[in-house]
Length: 466
Image 1: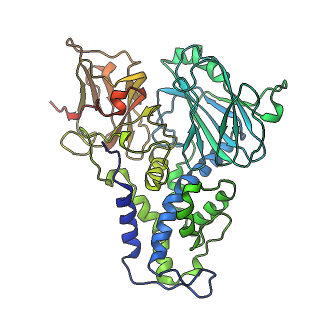
Image 2: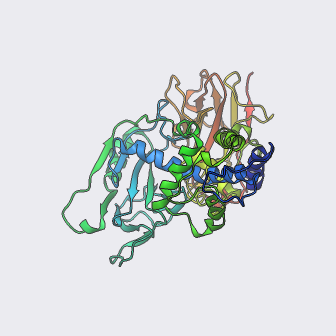
């Protein structure tokens, strides 16, 4: 099963658009090599833009967070996101987040986790390019208390005894932790204490009686829509922002070939990208890159093989992308902070069983046969999002539904989930929908091998207008 079209198709589409016009010549007043084939400049820039999207999005997200939370400080969110939340696309309403923006330039950090007494949690750590470099939690390290040493790319030292070493390839990193919450009362009585046990401190203060700073939030910060900010950023501003970020967040060794190509147009760590190095026609094409790339990465316009109308992530390298830059860019835009498949998978759907877009003009039902609920070792849920990837306002303030809700099963053991704008008369099984288009995501936390290998697939979304 495949989640997205093959990367080469996406890149080819972008390249075609950037090279379809008349040939270009470099401005001889610039410093770039005149040996670069004229028609290759826009295609190189298009690939560089796709490469840099995750890095720029990560830093813009960081800057938004740092307006209220210091660096290297946990921010524990004590509530679920609501319809006004805009900081991260496709948030979940299953766990309380514990997040921290890390700066590893000066020294390593010690991450301490408490004994959660069997409660499911995970603390994935993402590098500046959104790769999950490690994922401490119930699945990987158990639920006993532990300490981890997180180091940056230039660190050379000795790891203290009884600490697990996590080496980050970039100085910017992000912890986006999640702890299972079964109800509001469960959150207050159980999860708050677990969150309080997640601690970060510089290695130099380890063992000293210093209380690390923590920010507790009873409500979710609203934040800005980072995707819109990036899409409106001029191409020269984008590339120079990217060039600056790459100084402290070096690309991986596997990116060498791509970086050699990007350097030819002024995209490399510490370089300056200058539009005046190119003639009028080339500048026009370069300025169109953000619009073209965002259009090509629009999930509603991507054609992909589906199973029962659902795109399933198991066929693509979600969470650690290697050189699959288009997939990495897509996830940074529409699923920033995505986990490794072994931690969670997110089948998504924008169409019904007939292939028509999901819309509040219709009523829908998802029917799970007995014994065919999402197979997990932790828990599952179904979330609904508007066309921009955010929760919607609804009368019962429900943004997701799943196995921790008081669902009403049919007499034969099957389960029906109703998705529509008005109550179906069975509110326990109702996931409210907006009036216009929307999408669905099923979250399977700690999925079983049946889910990971495609032996289980989600049932189709059926129109239910009777």
